Length: 275
Image (cartoon, rainbow, N blue to C red; front, side):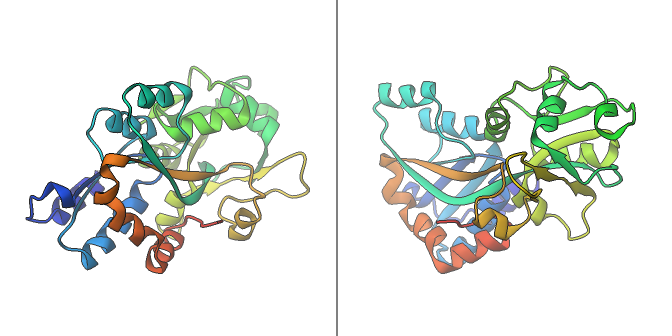
């Protein structure tokens, strides 16, 4: 992946472990993490910051195994993970550094612009096998989702109160989902809205508006005003989990994220700061 190549260039010659930071985890956050680390390196060249994705679960597991200093995660710790950290006596700092909205995407020529939550529930769970109840056409529904270690996978299931259809395709990341949807007129997938914003302005996919039956209007995950007002049904905080043993090492990087420059990068990358 391109972001791994970028960080071969960013790692400095200094081999001092106290200034070498390893960040692993959420694919939703990886583009943002790369951009932040690039800018951080320009003002703090004595540090090296290595970024890799792979999913929230992988990032959290890397902390448990002592293989990372920061786990980026698009979900909270689950009960099993929380228990494992306690058993290993690993104390964590938990930071919410941005907010993202999950976008549901279809082919750019898909005949609908809006989908309501009950229908989305039936589509992604496999209750609807074709688009006929939704669009009137008998095209099969092809679901492009993430693997089970993805925080976004867990978030969408939890928010909809479903289990994904067994026929759903499990993709390695946002980029694979995007490519699948671009080529599939009957596909539907989900990616971080920040990832959509990171793409070219002339999008090759359609971002669906989501209609919550309890609310008056359908909302786009790209509508900043709606996100700030908490009106989008699939918005969520983005977390960073940091072991207390790594805190002093990463504090300079965290301070950069929280600075005005860091906030501008977060917003420019298509993410939100709602606190």
